[in-house]
Length: 469
Image (cartoon, rainbow, N blue to C red):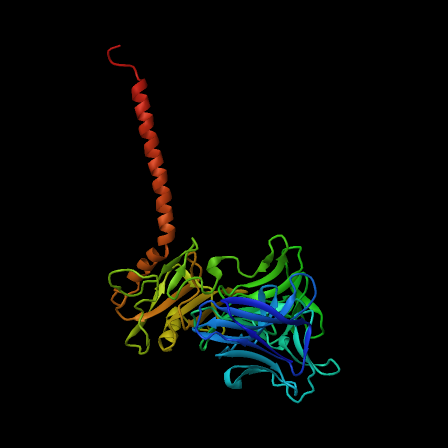
């Protein structure tokens, strides 16, 4: 069976064969607009499951992305895309976007000139049908309904109810206009959120079962994200904070936050029942590079070099690159700030903050370092974390036991090789948002007191007896 659907408007949605499965030999085609139209979205819904609202549906999609059109096979829960063939790698096409389940059992996306842009690679394995299960799992099955391929084996940024993630698997999401990406990872000793940037990887939230118990897989149940061991026993859970049943877990591509979501019939949309991070300054990309998230949840720039006239919202403006050569750079200690990002490879058993600074200076890709000292069970320790970018920095109370240092060119900060001037300058920069608020409040109070005294003096003068009486 071959179906053709033509895209004639900026946004269209149609159902061409809304059953719960399709047979081998099936093909459907979307016509791609000739001219690029920003915001264009065209979808042909192929399958859906009759269940409680909102239900699962499968769609062939054409979307305008980066001045081109992408073609993908998607699974939706209501209006939320919970799986996509183009999550990790988009298939860009012209003229047409076609989905085909070949007679030999291979599911393919094709573009102009029959170019194959995505496939399951299941040809010759006895595939007979493409099914959409009640869990939202998209599967290819043989004549005995044995699953040959399933979308659950290729997680994206969402995990739906009934789905499970085994150890060493992860969800990923990609913030716009960034070279970094977020990941939610299942490891033997913990589940954690990470910011990934090139060779650098930093965690910013984690959850560990008690008693150092090992994890085998996690599953999303009605009331919680449940964690299981090798014997299939539940050893821990992250519960929902509401009475409504959970429908999916999502790793947000804007904030990097992890949330458990339910559907609110009254609001007609999905809402969070739990979020891993509840403070703005605990989000990994709350501020731009070389920005600090302050106590007032606003961003202030770390001004490391002398700038010209004018201002910019880009905190990294003028920051030089190529931090190589001990004779060219130095580490400057910023007081009252730290980083929420924890390095996966932290240097331990170092002897001083100066040694930590030298480790960053000797690494051309390092731009910042965090030195931490303290006691653990009576044992004094010192650690050094190195960073490939200045992100996740936030204001903290002084005396926290940590020291955040940023690499700069020698003499570029106006301190002539000494960090004291920059420390004071940065503290002023960090506290500018909070300082302005305090000044405004104190100024208002002072004005009120002075105004009240003047009124009182005036009234006293009018009511006092005259000298002639």
